Length: 125
Image (cartoon, rainbow, N blue to C red; front, side, top):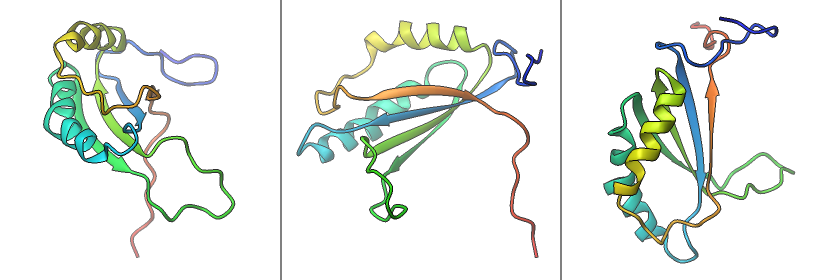
């Protein structure tokens, strides 16, 4: 179902979402943070029904000139499909069993986006 702006409402069982999670490690603990994330956390998130994939990213040192530095060094893109409230519930229920790391800074954030329109790619020559 579309709202007034033409966007799709969440809750459709085949609707895909992109989760963007921004994180930092505690100062001086990048190696420990990255090992925990790669060996435990991504796999734990992917065990939640509806979460299809995860891809970690690190901030590149070459950013657009004149832009303020972002507050986060790391990002993760997760893609999910299905009923978003159910995925949120299942993630909350599973998270107490996840391996924790105090190398993860407390200033992380996560937002979920719904796709709007088709993917547009550069035309082939």
